[in-house]
Structure formats: C-alpha cells, structure tokens
Length: 483
Image 1 (cartoon, rainbow, N blue to C red):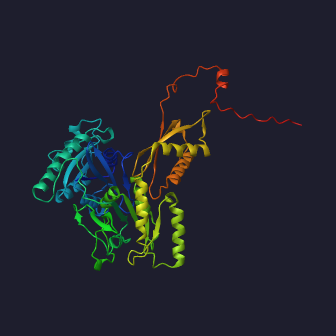
Image 2 (cartoon, helix red, strand yellow):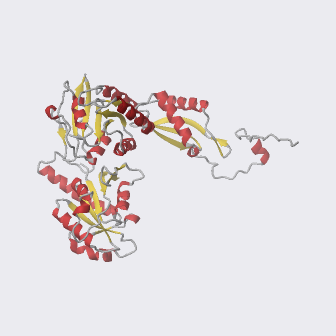
Image 3 (cartoon, one colour):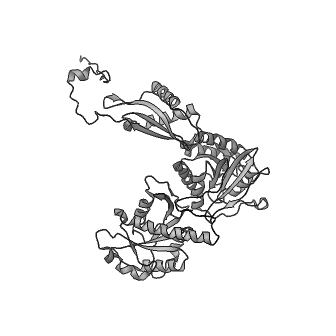
C-alpha cells in the first residue's frame, strides 16, 4: 500500500518546488485538473523502491478569523484524501498568524502531520526553526531547502519509517491483510483490465452495471482501502475480464445515477492499473474542459482507450450532429481511437465497446520483430526521405521494439536529434497504419549512434570535400541575362 502525501501551507512557502522534487515532474505522471480538483495537483513519485502519491494545494491565506473559508476550497479535501500531511512554512519569513491557524486545524484532525521548515538555504537551520518549536506537530520541526534538494531524502526516510510502522499496526489489528515495505499489492485480476473513468454523474456506475450484464459471472468483489477502486473479475462469453470500478457498483434496482463523490486518487489509480480505459463523456453536456484533462492524463499514462459518449438516446438529431462535429474538431489528436455513442441506461451500443476494448488491448500489447520493424522503416524512407541537415541527409538505419503498453519503437540513425516533428509524425502514421495499431498511443525514441568524428575538425582539402560521395551538391542558380 503506497502512502498519499498532502503538501499544505501558505502561498509561496515552496510547496510546488517540493512537489516537483518529490515527483520529478519532468518524468513523472502529473495530473492538474483545474476546476475539477479545485486547483489541486496530483503526482506520483518514487524514492528507491518506495512509491507514493503527492497532492499539491494552491495555498492557504489564513487570517485572525480562521481559515475555514479558504480551506474549504482545496486543502481540506487534500488533507481528507491524504494519509500523511507535510505542513510547509517559510524559514526566512518566520511564524505568521496563518501558520498558527493551520496548526490548530491539523491538531484537530486525525492525520499524521510533519512541520517542514523550508527555505533554510543560506541561513542557520536552527535559527530558521526557532520560531516554530512551540507549534508541536512533531517532536521538532524538520528543516529542508527544496530549491537545493537538501533535507528531502531525510524527511522522506522519516515519513516512510512512520508509514511502515502504521501499516504493520493495521496488520496486527486485522485491518490490513499483509504489508511489505516497497511492495504494492494489487488485487487479483484476470484477463483484460478495464478502467471506467469520467467526470461525476456522466453515467459511470450505470455503465459498470451494464458492462457486467445479466450473464456476468462475478468471482468476487475486492474492495481495498477507502481510497482504492474495486476490482471485479468476471466472464463474458467465455472471456475473462477485470473491471476497475471507481464509482462503486450499484445494485440493479439502484442503477439510476446519483451524485458521485469524485476521487482523483481512484481515477489515477484506475488509469494506471488498467490495460484499456473507457472514458465516459456526457452527451447532454458535450465535450468540456474537464473531459480533456482526463483524456490528457490517459495519454500521459500511455494507456489504450476508447471513448463512450453516454446519454445519446435522448438527444435531437440536430444536437447529435452538433456534438459529432465538435468531437471531430476537438479530438483530432486521438483520431486513432474508437468513439461509441451509447446509452448505458438502455444498453444501446454498449456491447460494441467490447470489440474496441479487445482491439485496443491487442494493439497495446503487440510484439514485432526487429527485422519487420526495420523493413517498415526502410519502406517509409524510400517513399519519403529524411531532410538534409548541415549538408548531410539524416540516415535512419534500423528500428526495434522498446516496450509495450504503449508500444514503443526505437529508431537508430545519425543526426536523429535534428529530425523535424513533421517527419516524426510521418513515421508514426506509417508504423501505425502498417502495424494496424488502433486505440492506443505510441511512443517513439530516436537514438543517434556514437560518431568518433563528431568533435574532430574536418582537415580535408576543398578538393576532397567536393569528391565526397555523401556530399549534397548545391543547386546552381541560372543566370538571367539583362537586356
């Protein structure tokens, strides 16, 4: 079980800097759902073999009257979702009224909280912490300098020591089946893992029940912790699937959609664990910005997916035409994925989702030989040669598979770093068409072989350079005679 860590504190105390350090945001999967998450940012991080999720909040102003109004917007929810709270203060600015108000709230909560004194770079840590000793969240404040990456590993070591002790205590009380540090235990799953995600009240739970169907064979329901999704292994026409449910399966008599409590934790978990994601969109509201945020995270995670436009039956023909046109315009960057117009309540076209799920899964998990991929590359180069860079044409030599889910194609050659985006898109479209890759993103990696002459001065004579067979001859301009 991986801990969820919330970063809270006043604006400009360094929460975002610490968030970026903990998640290594340039490499990590980060979801920023503006509006939908009330400006909270979620990211996954890893320290050695330890994984965790971090929630970054927008900042708490705090005043003498209390912090309830501002807290209700974002930080209360972040604290509620978290297992551990890191309360950041500014070591250079010292203690403020807002800090004291926040500490009062954290003391009243049941969350384990650390007082982290940031911005201790350039000053004596003991001096920076002097104002904060009396707050009493932990035995003593913990000094760090997030901008310098100083003190963060020691802080996280202490956090994980607490987490290991806490989880072992849950095992001893029978509230957790087992715990091993650094090991994320996933519920047993069978066949293709399908994650159903979407905004609140778009029909996720209705679709979950419809996907399970009357003929389902549910082996068991395995809920995890309060923030975990439910994994439901079942069979359909002899094929095994595992449905990852974030909304909670309703009994069929209660299948009518109710107001759902949206959990980014569950949604991110479902996307990460799934082989194929079904993104549910409400046809009556159309494609909104929050849908695009969710789709963006699916693409960032590299997951295969299909899109279900739900509540389609009740729309007029004019409305349907408008929505189709809007989707075609705004989702042009995912034109490789299937879109289904369904009614989860009445079952219209829901069965067709399984065909797209199967195709997307096979594409995402596909394996191809180096010879085959290299042949595709050579054929593509013959049709459309790479451009000339610094007088020499880029050469693409061979291709091989670097991974699956999503499919990763590694292409070797010279000067590949100079390959234009337009040519990279051409190669992706070619590989996608020839390999028949539908319903999943693709990743391409371009590697340039070591060139022992790359940093050496060209000592050839002008005559030798002219005779170079690889040299691209300049085009002579025709002279125009003046009358």
